[in-house]
Image (cartoon, rainbow, N blue to C red; front, side, top):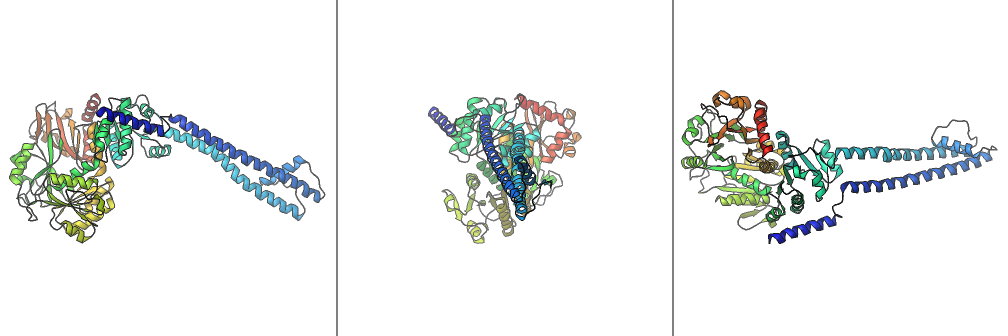
Length: 599
């Protein structure tokens, strides 16, 4: 069956290539287009030149007639001379008419000639000088192949919020990339904003050969499912060993993409929905794992409903009692690195790092069967029934959380969930969906403006409720926090991280927008020092959450133990803090890059 499906994919790819006229060479296509354009230009110039010759001939003949009426005679060369000097507005004045008819004729010649030349001269300049120069500049801005020295690069096949975030990650890690674009104007625009681009049709094997796909670290296909299938199949045929990561809009496409050659298929809507559900479940002292990193579990846990409220982290003694690494505390979108004097409030959310056993002990001590709202079990309200909203619902259902989905489009209603059809901006709709009894609201629409509006509205209706919002663009994350969201997940950041982790496995985990857990080889200058002596937090604003050695991972390492040689630090920090760590300890990341190249 797999073989027959593979043959089917091959036939589909062959038909697609046939519909496009075969895998034609891109340079030949451009050359044919330029030749056709040049033929049109020459024809236009010939027509204009013919009109000009006719005008000169007619005006010269009329000049003869009018001069004869005035009793004067001139040669034909003189007639042409007068016509040209008058049409070009030179007007030397050596030959003039004395009659009214002659003077009116002179004005007609002057106006006709100047108007005609104002059309011809700019046309000739633009078509034969300016436009060819522009085309040549565009060709240089948008190359059709990569240098022979290019290797270890990422090949992207689309440009969007996810790809832009991935490019930023690649730039920061000094990993080369190239964007394949099939439109030369789009390639020029991307080049002008500083992106590395190459022109070529995405269904042509020659494009990937010129992009040196065999030397690439990864190919990312992030278009529609059918196009991604064609890309994966085309690349796998000519580069059997390259890593191929594709996105999938529909669950049914996952198997097809894998058979076509994709090493990993990412359903971005499901990834984002699952992450949002995890952010909403950190209530009442129960931990919820939001990710795993190098065998270390990263979890969130709310303090509302526990005896931790109004106590400091020093008084809570979480490190001593459970051995957990305390990364920091979220409070209404504000993140604070763990500090002994930090006071926990009912809205606080602990960010923990530890093993499964450590988190289980934490849950056994703090998880309360009672809910702040007085309900027997947690309840959630999901606004938006698209891909992300449905993924949120599936994750909540798996955790046994009761939920309702508010959706405007009746056709999106599916079995297994309670839907309320209507506008989420209508108080009656939200009441019917259960906002008064809900512990969390998850806002999942694809429009950032709508999400900001609904976040502000829900915060006004329920000041105490936990709000998790989705952001399509990174620039709207801070706006959603200001609008009242407790947690915001960026579609671009979540998607780019899922792709990046396939390239740099076990090296980066996004905890929230702009907050990462990452690893670094032990800096040479810190070997033998204790964490207290190293002052990593004071120097870089990063917090060490664990140390990994050959014997395993030690979460919440003792600040008085000397740092070993053969070890790696697991740290948490913002984008700014991570960049500062790179500047303070540059040799550590050089070792990381060398290790990545060897891998």
